[in-house]
Length: 74
Image (cartoon, rainbow, N blue to C red):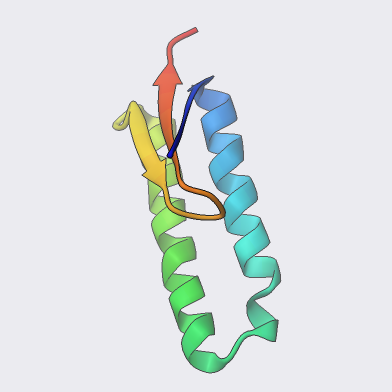
């Protein structure tokens, strides 16, 4: 698992980017896969809100590649 340190605004941008790429391809998926994708996108949205509000200073993402992100203060 890769580890990254980044400022809060970059962490939020990363989450938004991953969420958008998931949702762009949702129409190409089977119904069950589409539902799982929607659920994963909702989890990413919640994560984004928590990071933005400062409730989380680190988090892990499983896709597209596993990574641990630590939000730095500078």
